[in-house]
Image (tube, rainbow, N blue to C red; front, side, top):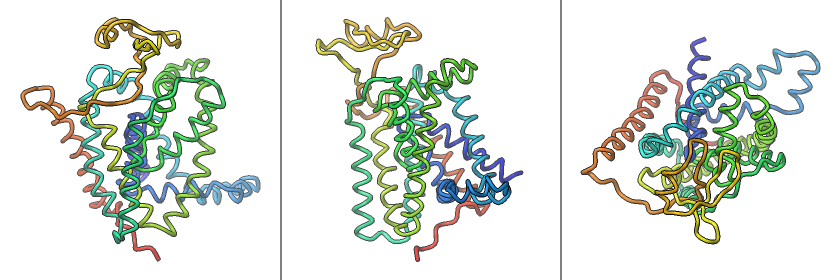
Length: 346
């Protein structure tokens, strides 16, 4: 029972991370020592498992896919996403720098833990780390697409987002931002589901879920093969991804609004239509209703904190809190023998 609860708590942390654009649930799985077990369990959902189920050998099928482990993770992640969607939505709307700062500290503190799992930093591993870092940073400069509710596109969102959710350092939520459907899927639909507004939530979440399952089945096999055959290279690439993701979640940056051909700020209305608004960005923000939002086209104008501002000191405190949380999780896992370093690949 204790192991189930501990695994559920790790699932809760993964779910919370996946709600934040720029933060990877895969990173949380990696630093808490469950990543390779998770990939191995997901890989075992195959034809042989279906055959065991059809033969009524439920216990064997459950053992093959590590069902109790996956169930604990799933329960924790679902509870986290449902309960934190509204809280994080409020946090982004009212205290975005504090939220970004907390997760920046969390991810920054995790980088040495991820890199430490490389048993030998060969030139190839170093190059792959640099490539991973460059790829993660390049995501910042991509222009987000427009929101779409077409079932095929929602399924594609599920495939791509799930793949990125289980790759440490690559944020599924940020990929959804780039695909234009982050708020629709991770905030609006999840909030509707928690409010039992099934008619609004299910038409969105069902195709996303189908796509996510397909993404899991395919990518888990690829990752399992990579970890078995090219462990150091895979972890080196992941370390680069995690390092590069810091550019996305740096707290002191500006969200760049989407603008139309005339330079007007594009706003998504309560009816989910796009509307161009005149005035400066500050004026448009001031006149937004509760159910309206400015479409974010990207990030820019990175800056350093100002030490004479109390708000920036509060952000520093949030950053330290995030880092200490990771240090505490790592210390607890090692003290309990749950986070061993990997053996050198054979």
